Length: 304
Image 1 (cartoon, rainbow, N blue to C red):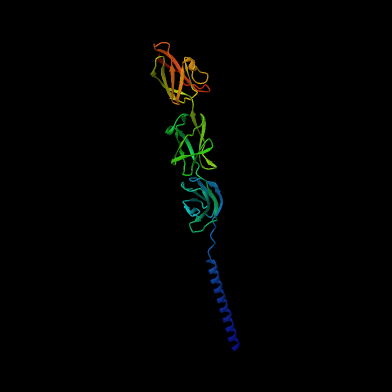
Image 2 (tube, rainbow, N blue to C red; image 1 turned 120 degrees about the vertical axis):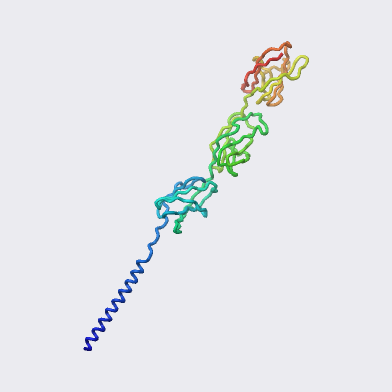
């Protein structure tokens, strides 16, 4: 009887031990099953483009972006559109300053991906027109002022004339004023730069040297000659007038011994001292010709 009781006690102890072990195992199993799975990391595999100007669209491709994420450029938060947790697209703010930024994505759950260097380029200036596109070589003061029209001009924009920086005045993001320097006639290049390697397409400015007659009037009258006043533009000290094909003044023209004389006042005015052989008015043709053979239009004058 005593032996039977001892056997029963041992059996109870074994069963109790098994129950305890199974309970502990179940507790550990439940605990292990409740451990959260590690979140997928935010991984960027490509950045297109790798550098861009303000206003450009940037596309990030990779994985783990989630349903929504936000792109950061340094501390600047930028609205971002995410597609299929694999692609994120955002636009660089138009007023963003040029420089090197740390670009990274932050998922909606707070997970932050690795940062990458991204260069924001200076905004490229666009030059569309020069107003006016040509000036007279003898223009002065305000007449030499030209408006460079376009877009993306900033306080740091510089205007270049024939490859050299020229003093200019920024009026707005789409207009810069400058004064044309004293240069030879012909074609000249104008360009705007926001940085040494960031420039607009050059435009051509014409400095016009062809003489042009505006009008001819009779001036002072003397005993045996009178003055014809020729006004216009682009006259030079060596300009000549051709009267019915005969040159007066300039190099190779008639001198004072032949009485006819041409006096240069300035680039807008010449005085032709004419000695008529008769007081009766007649028609004759007159033209102003500059050195090099560039001539004005031929006009008909009615005078003695």
